[in-house]
Length: 292
Image 1 (cartoon, rainbow, N blue to C red):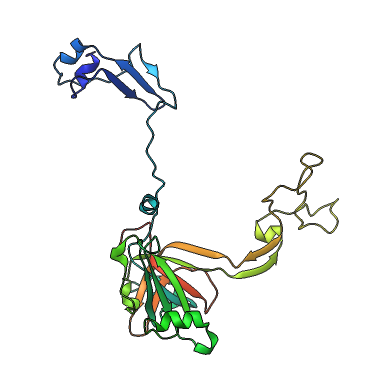
Image 2: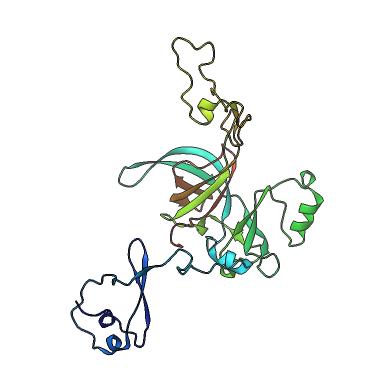
């Protein structure tokens, strides 16, 4: 087997680190071995007898920066802003080849950019959009002043979409229609899920319940034991119990856009999206797919 330095292309190395699947090795190479020519035939390199296993503290680790700019660079964000849509329900859509696809109907109603946030002022890049229409008497003076400052009519819903950098910002007052998305692309749909009220552990967490045979008296759907005895003598935090179910923010990722109808302002997406009928849904480019 050729000496260790025969496999190296970097001259004048006195310390070499070998890596394997489980550990790292360190050894020393003499000057005579460094001067030997490199062979064309490559053999499997094995750790030498004098190799030393590096401890966890000696292994090099990646440097993580705790600055705000470094945190934004690590955050996975979409390159463009999103839109607000109203969920109208689900129906069947038939493609040209006759395939039946279950779709959700989303209506985009008068979406407009209301504000822009930058990293120099707010610390991050974001686009604030408003959708729909609302009676000014049902709005606060702060929101009315915020919209009238940029000559924007009252909106029924206002939401903010974070973007990766300043290239995803749009001028204030820019209208956004369904043409913003293309057929076949993937989006992330966010909304508030349906509220299901106070639910038991069988519905809320999928508990199997107590036996339905002898020995159980009118507690077949109960949670059973919820803790120990004197040690620790209390119920641990986070214990799954009955309580309010639903009504939380839910995100459905990688939803495919099946059809875009600009003439009526409708987007058809494949499958279900969070929220009840007539609820607001935020649609933005999928962060786990390539930018459209």
